[in-house]
Amino acid sequence: MISFKHVSKHYPNGTTAVDDLSLELPEGDITVLVGSSGCGKTTTLRMVNRMVEPSSGTVSVGGRDILEADAAELRRGIGYVIQQAGLFPHRTILDNIATVPLLLGWGRRKARARAAELLELVGLPAGSGKRYPHQLSGGQQQRVGVARALAADPPVLLMDEPFGAVDPVVRTQLQNELLRLQSELRKTVVFVTHDIDEAVRLGDRIAIFRTGGHLVQCAPPAELLASPADDFVAGFLGAERGLKLLSLSTLAGLPQEPADDKGRWRLVTSGRGEPLGWRDTEGPDGDEAPLLPVRPLRDTDSLLSALDESLASPAGLVARVDADGVLTGVTGRDRIHEHAGRRHAEAGRTNASQAPDPDASVTA
Ligand SMILES: Nc1ncnc2c1ncn2[C@@H]1O[C@H](COP(=O)(O)OP(=O)(O)OP(=O)(O)O)[C@@H](O)[C@H]1O
Image 1: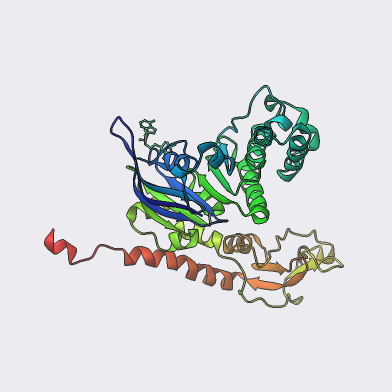
Image 2: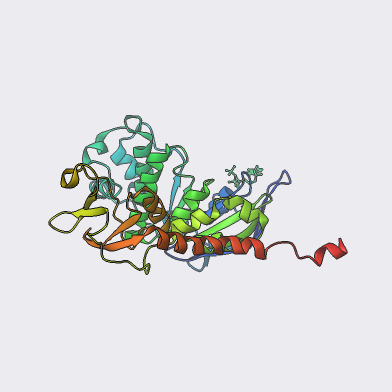
């Protein structure tokens, strides 16, 4: 666990980058730091591995005050990933990944073997190990950056806008990869981003900072979206807070009915019971009619995707499948809208409950 106790950082020019920060980052969780530019996110992150030393207060990692640890030893237990990967241009990918194991004196053969293992872990082809950074795409370089940070299997991973410089499609892939890796590795991750959607997707908890280095709120994404502490947080989360909340709610528990074959739209399934598409039984082509697409959803899929599919489905029905992709039933548009509406209203209600106190104007 990483802990900040009354930590401040003042620079000699008078800037207060971090102001009296108290925050606990649970072991094995991804904590995302967000906030406007210059609010102290990077400074906070760098205080964990002592690249920046606090002016006052205590930062501890695994219960130990970092100022009492040897800085080099401390950093061996902390992987660090930055934007644009920061790879050594004249070293091969394999040697880049092997950097820390080599520094730790593992010997070339063992360090290379570990690097090859990590190349596979982050989803890069084995052949790319012999290439140089400029021969890889930005997204691939970023994967190498993650592999390099993980090479010595550190319990803590610091990630400073690691996916900030890649296009949205690659960014989503990298986010998925990180979540997959994290489900296996369970590192304690501190992740800085400007992108609130990225924070909502990745964070077990999100810490929102305001200019001047003030922490305003730290909570799991669903709690933050449903109950922002103040107008600043609500504004930062954006007008589509309700939809973001739906992206975090799943279909689990939402009732379904058997797919009926009497109505106009028939859900055609494969021999194994996998939904293939919708057929219009009242169209001129009858049983020959081409199938219209269906996007079957699992219980783990989001309410937002169900809302989307309910609008796209010609039958107004969402096909539900089990983990093997086999049809379990359907849920109607009305039921999904009603359920989504209730979740959405939870975010709205919080807004209303935070309307200014009418008595407050008396003293104004
Ligand atoms: N070495 C330094 N000397 C003086 N001021 C600094 C120094 N490093 C950072 N600052 C200032 O401290 C404040 C916090 O900087 P920091 O980089 O932590 O913010 P940030 O939230 O990560 O910003 P961004 O999102 O723009 O990267 C800023 O006002 C910055 O200008």
